[in-house]
Image (cartoon, rainbow, N blue to C red; front, side, top):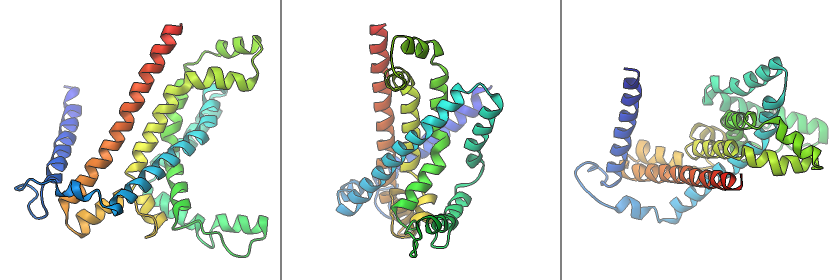
Length: 274
């Protein structure tokens, strides 16, 4: 009985995915009756290729930066002996998840605007007269993508770091390894599964980001999710929008598969050395 809700949800998502896949092989105004590869052929147009490249680059860059920022936070949560400090950091990390992306994005608009908090601080410190262009460009979108996905990177890292015995770090230090060597040769390799999981989660989430690029990018930053909205909602070209959706999902699944393969190889090598 407990599996029924999960089975229903998985079945519903599968049916929806198959429907999108079927429509991608249709024609405009004949999504279900015709079969055609026209939408996939049109994806070779430089317009779509450039937008796909920009989307993947933004997702990859935000995933890497988010992981770098999240690792010290995850390390603190995994190593601190204060339960109060751990819970306070966890609350701060998870709090954005309780607020809609729409509200968070509007908050960034207020912060990054010409008269926003960020420009006021920069102007007070550097005595800059002209405000910095932080909004309606890639910088604003990147900041928004990073801030909204920090929890997705932190939590898998915490799980991996907690599984690393402190005795390994102590043994490496006793054998003469510096603190930097302990991190690079002991902690990072053992924490890699959590780091990789966080990278994949953030990358997959940001490839399909819609609200953040829409509000923080204005009309100057176009991602694949925005083009899908235009194709389906404005141009009513459902086959083209479906084809773009299939490509987006395919890239996310490919990255997930690569992460699984690399993770298995790393585990196999560690077991063979052990």
